[in-house]
Image 1 (tube, rainbow, N blue to C red):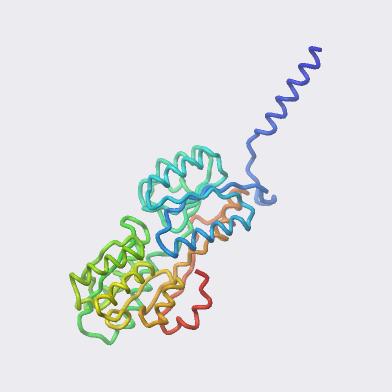
Image 2: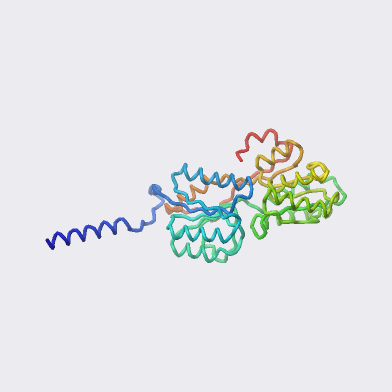
Length: 326
């Protein structure tokens, strides 16, 4: 009887240890693990771009057979940090997130590192002195997007010698696209001393705030405004409504260049109300899922993964509209 009892105890213990045994890293030559859990913290739903980005991630996870724990930060960094800590507590395989702002992530990312959970940053960069806290940054080149917008404007106005007054609608204060799109644009227009930014206002990448900000800018500057540079299409589209209500013609009385290249911007270009949009592709879901699978499988991935984009002036809007997937 004692021998039988000892056998049962040993068998049960062995089964428990086998079930709970931590999986060893998979080598690059072995197949991908069948079950992967990804925790993703989205910063919010402030724009059509962000909505398309979230849908791309959800769809790609489903197609790849990856279990997705998705959290909407609702434009609050504290919500994102709380979500990341929840992912750590749930022992997900990989954490990915789109940071609302650049700074303030080191503590929670160190917690993820200590828990042995790799982190992939998407869309926006962070500021940290320890880049071992994340395995990869997957994003567009925001500075280059700003430069592309500036180059298009300089070329369009190359024959104009009079002073050109630009108003700028920025995104979230402190976010990497806001900082870099501004720097890139200014780097180009400084070559033309007659092109000056006379007002710059944050409108958080939101259509409603773009409308409100442009309404105030028109009250302040009125007919002095020659150009609107918006850090995303949603703010530009909101601003277009304010310009029309003021009695001016967007795209004609005020030249408008923005960033994202979503369908709404193409429709406004076809209507003659927006002049150019620079592409920032939100459909990074498949690329993210491949990176997640590679990381879990122990396959090295680039530290920085750049998502390419094009420039679309109003002249090509009609023929390109049917190609837009967001």
